[in-house]
Image 1 (cartoon, rainbow, N blue to C red):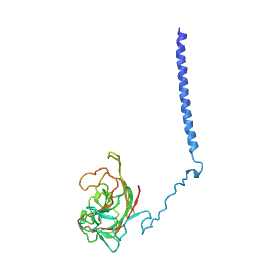
Image 2: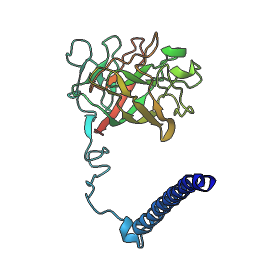
Image 3: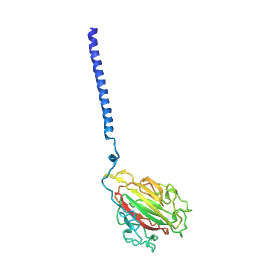
Length: 269
């Protein structure tokens, strides 16, 4: 009886060994297959990692009086045809100067582009008013708004301290600039802004935050900052769903005297 009782146990042992061996064999085969796949796809000459199509569009970087040939020129110093008053949509009342700039006319309101934009590369040049000797936020205050909602601050901070998330080149009330890169008061500053718009789903939920990168006079001051929402003066950022929107320039309504020139944009959508 003992002899026959051992037979089922021995049979089970053999089956188990066979399954283990089969499992190991399959695992080994998979590993060998992976090795073969890597070996098969590994480039053996430089041409295998070269891509020739589709060819890139050719852009003249200074094709439109200093603006790239594929840019939309928003202000070239001759007129304000690309702009309207934010309040009411009427003609712009800011002053177009003989030197090719335009200056905020106090208490006439913000201005914005007639066109709406999503993600963009934006170039703006601005100058503080040397006659404005006010302090804190009252000295040459203005702002550049992406989609009318997200502000890159314009302000003269030369010998003029203020809260750092409200100084020049800040993402207003959200992100101070990495450094202060202002030129002397009354000279021309440049902002080169890369803006990627936030995204929302069909139910209005934000699925991807917007980002802003800013070069101020060629110096990186905002490095792909993830926008928390709208740049509010009072209160926390809001994230109401929206699509494309205008580029807006601010009239701070305090005799700021800020001037702008050479404004152009490239759409990135």
